[in-house]
Length: 165
Image (cartoon, rainbow, N blue to C red; front, side):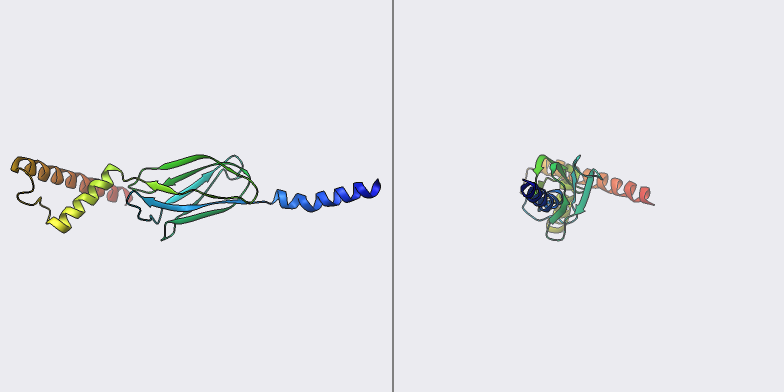
């Protein structure tokens, strides 16, 4: 009986470190709605299982990220990039050495969409709506809207630049 107890305790001591030190990971790719990869996205995992409560990384030039050495528990993953909406995925349960793949698709915010539309119009259409494409009154309203949005964006950029100084 003594040998059986000793064998069980020894086996338990051999298995215990692998259970205690089992570390999971979260990995994935972040894209926009056009399926283009997004570098520079801040990806945060949060859980009561983490001593520091939140751990973050930034996506690489391929839009990929990997957060390793996560303790077993239930996690939330948040994706954030300026000019895009924030995405949060909750209830991701990690156990053992499991690798959870959590991909995300970020949507443009209205300001980012307007800025890209203005840039496209300026580059490809010379900043003007082509003649004959729309009724003159509609074309005039669109031109005025582009002008007003452009001024608003310039004003915001100026305010952001002056606050940074």
